[in-house]
Length: 424
Image (cartoon, rainbow, N blue to C red):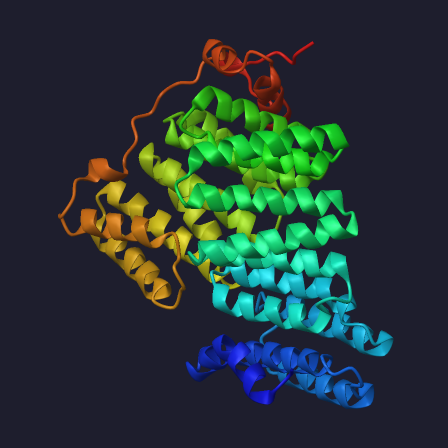
């Protein structure tokens, strides 16, 4: 049964954020008003005219928000989706825009607010539209997994899986099962996760679910990250299975991360150069610039470092908070490598200030490590990696089927000592 007290408790994360008086308060208020309108759709006989009038208050609130605020487009699309849903008297029409906004909040590490958004949609649509129910549960699993509520995440994925199975939606059923595998990884049950992902990959291939097969291959690469050869092969499989450039770019991003961790800086820089050129939005571009900053610092290339720093700072207003933390961390680390402790302290302090407002941000450990190095409590070796060259023969030994070579050739166009042949 719907109650005003229950709705207020559901939206407590947004209320708490508004109470902080942050610059994004008008946007948070607009989101709160939208969710309250959606709450009204829980009533079987809701008044569409009354809800339309309440929705108009959202646009009035947004009039005071700076145009460059990155969450405004998501809130506007959510308001437009909800207007259509009210006219058609069916809440599920607002779900795509609601999922997009929840995803943006997750990118900004505002997981509790994202959970409030998803639960509002779930309560409004539950039992009325199986596909929307499943998508909302799957996203809930993602958010719950990232805030460490692993049992609740597993339950959300299972509920979504059962709803999809009952509706005969094989794709969403497989994707929810993929989420369960990621929960196993977070629980440290890596071997079980690997076996499940391998099974998911096979089922998806047999059923012709290309996207699901690609995602399982990509997650399998992450699970296998300590097994370099198998991980890179799985990542190459994902790259070639993806049909959209955005997903291919994510595969390139993870390849770059693997290359950095292995000390293959030259090849990682080529990957990051490609990432910077992609038109995939500020979060992806910020990740690429963060990699550029880190690599330039490691290589003691001050000119390249300063170019990337200036570009990153120019797009600061468009970045989500998590991206701003990551970029400041990389700039602070870079100045540590150059021995400029004053500037290193300045940027690491910026990162720590932003982290104070975050909910379990995964960058916090790295910021702490860099701050410890700055304060002389730990050695600079902690954040340095010895560079290694990745020769063509090394790639061949890692990639007997040629998939990785094709991925690198397609993505980067490598030349010279790293020249690779396309597989026949």
